[in-house]
Length: 158
Ligand code: ZN
Image 1 (tube, rainbow, N blue to C red):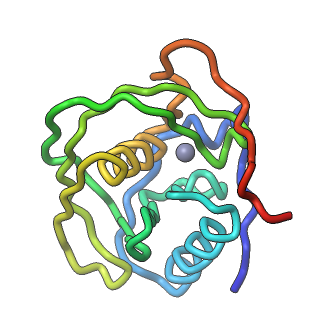
Image 2 (image 1 turned 180 degrees about the vertical axis):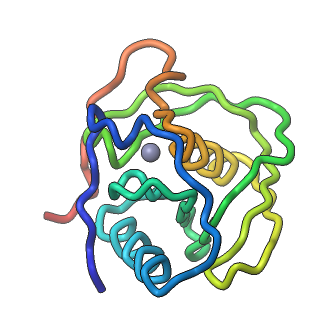
């Protein structure tokens, strides 16, 4: 297990458009494993490659049902609307209110480059769209309504 350093908002790597993955090289396979480890270590729901300084179209998500690896994800469909608090590992200690579609359907490749489709509602839809935004250089703060809030870590074990 190897943890990667998470880039913080203001780092220009978070504002760039990522390149597609052509094949799962050993280097990319290690990156995916490290991204999953880094997401869990930081209690995140998702993590995108540019957040660890790599400009590739890769994201990992876990909304409580196990890790999902998304390589070259594309949003196929969205519908509905949800408004809720959103945070990001690249902006620790903050959250803000964001309105996004309530449903998203995404096509991607897994860590073995097998194509699949995933549909999600509520938190999963939010996580999919948040992470895919990162791959195009966008942070949720561009969508925030009103001020950012400080997050209180009542349940965090230190
Ligand atoms: Zn994020």
